[in-house]
Length: 195
Image (tube, rainbow, N blue to C red; front, top):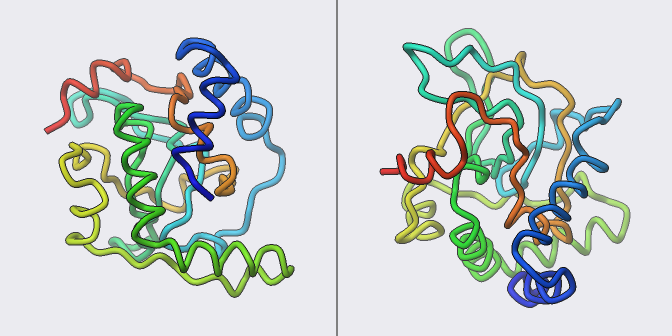
């Protein structure tokens, strides 16, 4: 691993932020946007990152913006009212440089568990991976100094379509990704709204 080095290598390969952003979008489009098959909901464990289509409520009086294609760092999965929800931070709503800082901290805090999980994937036993347990205090550490609470969301499982995990070796492609799926505001406007 080494997300900072992987990101820097990718940046130097592309040559500019705009080319990196476009390359990230094309990678996302080719690998995630038009999937026919969904990962199992059983694969959703804390510490993983998933992309999916979300049948969001319309933007209006209740919601200033909506993201139909979140990039979710999963913090928990549980019950809300009559249904199940997946809770986490939509990193698409975090500015790109702050995403990199988050990934560096995540890698530092959970280095050993991440390495063990990668070994389990390589050994063909991905279902035995350990979750990266987080609570509010740990999230504050991972996002220390980064405004993230506007991006902390719960998603109703029945409204999630075509769920797909982003493997750790592709996290570097998420740093400057804009899925272009925001309704009601641009990413830049949301970054400014962050509290």
